[in-house]
Length: 77
Image (tube, rainbow, N blue to C red; front, side):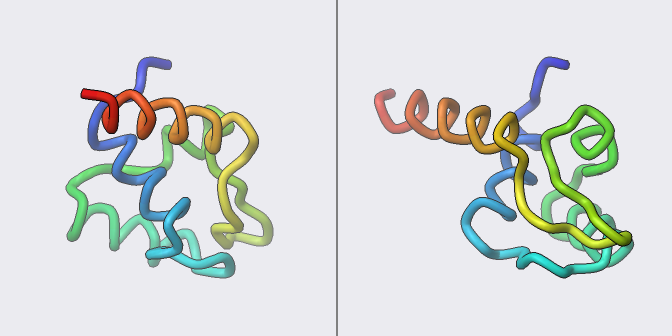
């Protein structure tokens, strides 16, 4: 899966704590739709976001690595 700038914004929302662990998935989907303009479900399905019991519970190692690499690349530009 090739990540878009919107996907990185979704990962950033979790990484930076704007969306905390325990947030219901449906609330997170609404937040992403209204604030970021994207859909987090493909990121969940691709293994970037941890969900347990229908709640967002952080980024997976894959999600953390993807976000950190993107952030490092952005800061060097």
